[in-house]
Every structure is written in C-alpha cells, then in structure tokens.
Length: 306
Image (tube, rainbow, N blue to C red; front, top):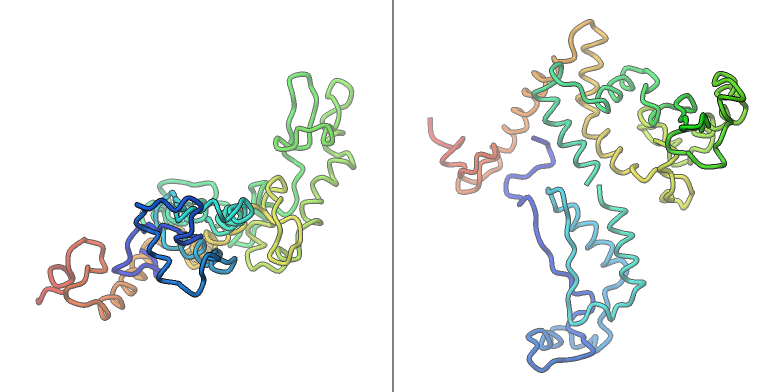
C-alpha cells in the first residue's frame, strides 16, 4: 500500500489519441468521424496536436497506468498526416516519462519491506541499505568510482570492464604483462575515476547521489534537463525507487545502528499502512470501494456498523 493510491483509481486506462482530429486525406464518405470537424469549426483543416499537448498527453497517460506495459494508439482522421517528426517527438517523450523499471523496483520493494526482510535478500535493496548506512555502495554500478571489475577474453586479452570490451579499452594481454600491473595502469585508473569526474552537474546536485553516483557509465547516454551530456538512462527509474524506499531504509538503518535487526521495519510499515488506511476511511463514501482493496463496497467491508 502506498500513500499515492486512491480508492477509486483504475489500474489502467486506454486513451485513443487523435493528433490530427478528423482530418484525413482520403475522406471516405462512410467514415463516422468526419462529422467531428463540426466540433472545432474555427480550426478548419489545420488541426494538429501541438508539442505541449503532446507532452501532457504522454506524461499523464503513462502516470495513469499501474500495469507493466503501456500501449499508445494513434488514430484519426489520418494520424500519419502529422509527419515523422511528430512521432519522433512522441517516442522521445514516451522514453522520457516511462519509469516500466522504476515502478517495478518500487513495487517489488514495497512487497519485500512488508513481508520478506531477513528472509529473502535482493541485491539492489541490500546495496541501497548500505548507502543509507553511510557506506560506499558495494555494487560497482553505484560506487563512486569503478575500474576494479574487469573482463578477460579467451586469449588472455584484458579489458577495462565487461561493458567496455572495445579496442579503446584494451589494457593488454596477461601473457605479456601481469594482471596486477594492467589493473594498476594509468589507463585503467583513469577509467575508474572518470566515472566520478565526468558526472553531470545535475547528478552532483541530486539528493540521491550518495546512493547511485550516476550509475554505470555505460548507461550515461542521455541529456540532463539542462541539456548537459552524460545522464544515466535509468535515472528516473532509480529516483522513483529511492524516493519510495527512503522512509523504510531510514528506519532499517536506524534499527541496525542500534544493534537491532533490520526486519523491525516490517512492524513499522504495518503501523504506517494502518495510519494511512485510517485517513482514507474518513474520506470514502459508503457506496464507494473500500480502501483496503477487498473489492467490496465500504459499507459492506470496513464501513459495516459494529
């Protein structure tokens, strides 16, 4: 249960997009949609969805979905009259606002933190907890610098990283130089510190820098909101996860720092959920669905007298 849920929100919705309205270059006489031109007579034949409407549609449509996959449907009129550039913008916006990864991490974490702490161990959750305890993240993709996890090929060639098996990152061959010397080479040390030194200003000012440090350099190929190069493709997903996990990780870190098991967070989460549910109960109508997600009306569930 999360505080962002509402008792009457559907898990998913479908919105048919008509970016060119009823305008069509064929104008079949039997088309039921041609008459929709009458709705907007002032626009005549120049109907086109502008960039801001496109942005708001994509953003809000994705936010309205609580399912693993979001499908966009374009219809008209004839939507292809909008041209390729319009749909390139649409795809770019879909990529910008899609968080299929952040939501996944958050949903799994919310289940784990309520039922499975101390029973099952999830790497990214454990690494995040370490960061909230003030430790440098142990997972290379989240550590401040890297360069200590390399890749060796069948013939003894050593490369900077499993994600960087390219000629520019070839360090040498173990038949000619020792692995110790190759790992300590200026080339490899620079490869590791570049992760920290090339971090965009947007990341440097982020509240969660301590937890992800910009992520793996291999995934830093999009622009920041300010247009700076080097933002991690998974940035929005990581942020969504860290924002969701933050209050729970704070409790877990406090438990551990006072020599108590981190599993104590489950009791705290239960109390928090009950408090949130109690607030929802005050607002729900008798004939609305009960906030407890039972599927029953409130009057037939928690709203029953006695």
